[in-house]
Length: 235
Image (cartoon, rainbow, N blue to C red; front, top):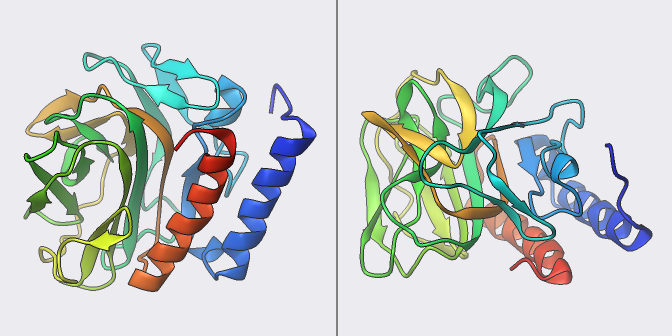
């Protein structure tokens, strides 16, 4: 880490990690990026495996303690590895994607996904529009959006089981599209693919991926992250 956080921030991060371990969530995480951070480089460090650092491509805008924002044209973050890279727990029938958006207009572009793969993606829409999401499937699941701001945890726990938790509320009734083995392409933030590659204008405060989460695990994960985000004013 190029710029160390102050003592108060170190305590917040430590408390988050301790809490995730206490909840049995640490082993479910491959990537956890606290994009709302004190420093742009620190924001791209994977909290779960600090030797892994996402790369900023085409200068997405970093705002201290708020996160990284896309430009809707060509800016994004690249994790540099596939979601199911060796050593990761993300798998065909056990997987999750996570975002917290604290600014942005909403709209069709995807906020997290894998390029070269249309089976992994999640978006934020304006209120009243339809939000689509896929996790290891060729079939989109959808719900009516209440606006772009908030936390989304998309989880697969079986061949056709899983849900999207929008600010803690399950949207798909624990049934999602049947899984596919296609999981190629690097994990990307602020862009995704649905035929053409799409770039987001959202600002992400947190993002991540890993193994499948039950409803209780998703709720606990959200609670821990919201404690951190609220403490720094990024919620």
